Image (tube, rainbow, N blue to C red; front, side, top):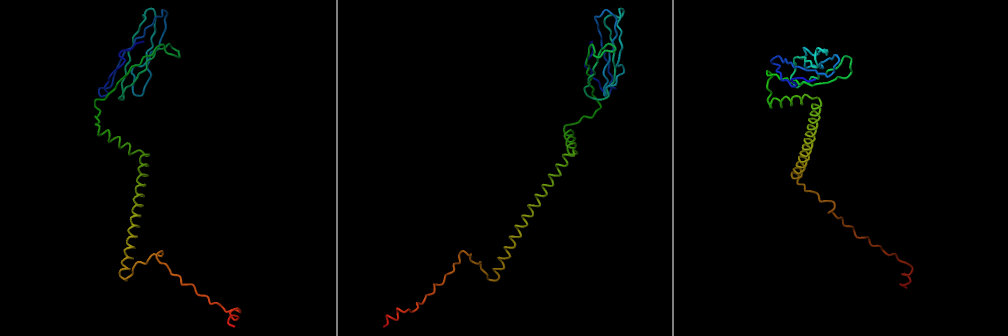
Length: 204
């Protein structure tokens, strides 16, 4: 089986209608029948999508059928055509016809609009929104921690300044460090020697 053309360009603004022909040939001398059809798709509506062909001694060895339909969406659509005998599980032959559908009335999207649309889609993503919320929370916590540390440092500096002003006002000086103060130990007390019997002997 052969089909012509196998690639068709259609414009949805001009109805999107198309047609093509398929020729089925055989070398069999005896009579037989065949079904030639295409598999239906959601984006292509077929007007003639199925043909039943009977080959006899009078019909010859080749027969041609016409298919037509309308594209309903832009894009490249593949039509799978098959020829098989009635009741057969597997086809005798298959052909693929490509319908390239465009829309001349469709607005042209510039690069900036495409980037804006992609950014909007990204922002509307729940996962991205949750990630951004967690990131903002961490930034706020970090800012609060830094602010608390700065406030504590300022308070310590203010307290030290008040202490210094108080000492200056009352004539106080800084106390020496404990390590620099050395206490002198008092001299050991002298021990008086008590008289003994030997001293009395010497006096005599």
